[in-house]
Image 1: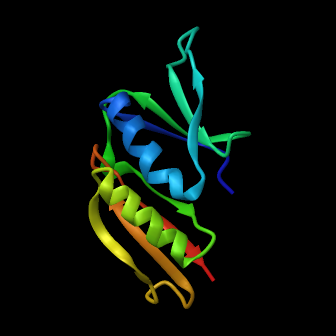
Image 2: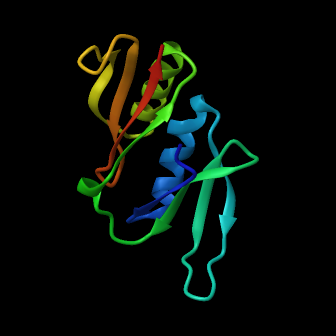
Image 3: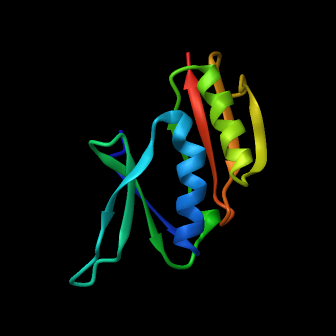
Length: 125
């Protein structure tokens, strides 16, 4: 299980807008800004309102270095995420579909964010 992930983005405000819209169908929102001090960067934490697990920080992105997946409750939530992400400016990488090349019951969509990172939302039945 992953406890947290910090994603370096080129424009925090643009990425906050994108991720707020794209992750809303998963009930994930930005709720925990962290003002960095003692050499720690400013961070913006996304999560369920009680725990932040996905963080943004300003810097130089490295999209080829990272891929991640958010969990969906069902296939419909994957579809709703995909529609929200595309409306927020994502680029399509793999539209929602069964990904039987991984195993039966794997249903996912994979999008590209404003900095070129690709990530998926997956439901594993």
